[in-house]
Image (tube, one colour):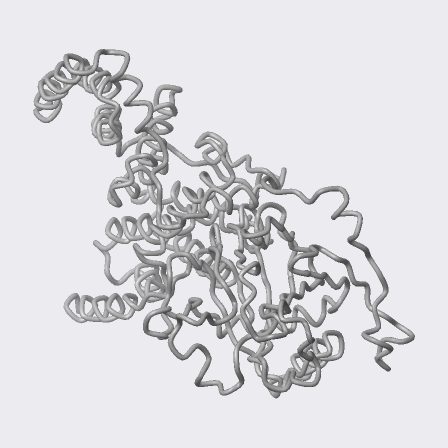
Length: 536
């Protein structure tokens, strides 16, 4: 019997290896809360049967019961807080596995059977690492400190304690280890310092001690060029553990390197060099600074004269029969390129139906490789998406028709409605919607030409973060449920408008749902005519 149970366990574990990228969609992560809640109920049944033997497990279950009960009341609100989302990934990927090992001595127990079956739906190491990196991304983009994240007091987060979790010493240490494994010594230092701070404030840990944290800290600051600080951390470590072999070796090496630098450059120059090298490393995105400034609501601003030319109006698209009596509310968001927002363009019921249709189909969002043209997942697009055709439900058909009536463009050659749900720290870094000339066969398989325009519908409010920013011109469009923004990607001549390079900022707090319609050139020949001006 034990062998058969083992074989079943191995089979289910192999099924669990299918990676679902849970962390890339808050909508999909809500299911994990109910899975966890079911596991807690099963665990409590097991405890009642052997309460005297399993007192330690009972305490564990009680702690998780509170978390899962709070989360299941408002799953999207609960997981909209990135700390809650990270801790859910960590619990299901590591802590429940540890608990399983603890109770496996009785393989016939109902709880173990339930847990083994449920494990095929659990997140894996990639999900936990993805959630950890998301917290670091939020730290950088919104210029937060580790203490703000560790205490759960994020800008825009709920004041309700049930929606706010804190990071323990072990959590901070795990975040530091994720950064260390990526050779990201900047973030390693930040999170190890936070872990050390919480230990010094009296928090206890059964898995990590000061010596271990100091060992990571000395090496991470050394890798950033701060020899003086590396030496200080090493000396503190040796005060606690004089026999630490690696620290004793590092002490001699750091002292030698420091002495050599001071002879060549002098003490002040060495310290200045250490400060110069320390900091967040540069990465692959040249416009990173500008992008993050816009995400924070900083950066470029229109002159008062330009801003005075932006208006709100009732719009009927040249006396369109549907909107003569009931025109839509149109607002100018930007002038060059022209970006407009339409208010109250879809109802709550319509948006909920679109989410309902999309949620079972959500898959990790893909991008087109500019070299090969093949669709692939990318680390700079953290979301899941689904495609909905007009034939699938009257609501989708109505939304498509509404887009055509308001924009005046033919949507028969447009792509299906794409619905996207962003995950923990979900984002889409700066990109163009249209195909550039250096891209091989962009959209050729569709046979409908390039993407002439983009319609972006916000289907949720986002308490903090999640703006759509145009990095070339400095525009920042903030999500507002039930509104849609619209812009042309191409000039009337068919040339690409490079001013439309845009990005979806990381979601700091909340659950961001959007749907977009990419409208193509075919069918627009007599709807958006070329002018006589070559500059157009």
